[in-house]
Amino acid sequence: MKAFDSMMLIDDDRINNFINLKLLRKLKVADHVSAAINGEQALCALKDLADKGDNCPDLILLDIKMPVMDGFQFIREFQKINFPNKNEVKIVVLTTSQNQRDVITINSLGYNYINKPLTPAKISQAILESAEN
Image 1 (cartoon, helix red, strand yellow):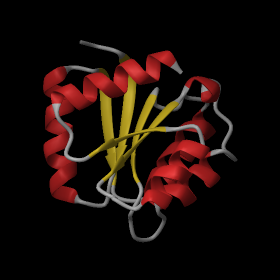
Image 2 (cartoon, rainbow, N blue to C red):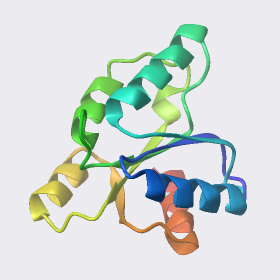
Image 3 (cartoon, rainbow, N blue to C red):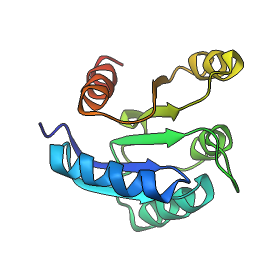
């Protein structure tokens, strides 16, 4: 079910990252799948790619509630980085938040979201929604 050349998972829960990376690789949704444990670490990795002239991952699965730099801060900083394929990058927010304010903020920014935990059905949903936008 390859849908992307590369994708990045940004989540502070190392166990979730381990499980989700395993699932994403098993489903073969991308040739390359990487992970970061917070927005700051992800931005550093993305800036390294930009400095080399490489493309940004096609899909970013982004947790909202993280220490160091949360998902909303990441989105603001991500907008400042220049990539050749930046306009094609899809960000899908991962959340366990039941806070309606978070959902409203995510929607107002124009991003789709899915509730954790990731499942094959939710990954398929994220891929379909990313293709539509």
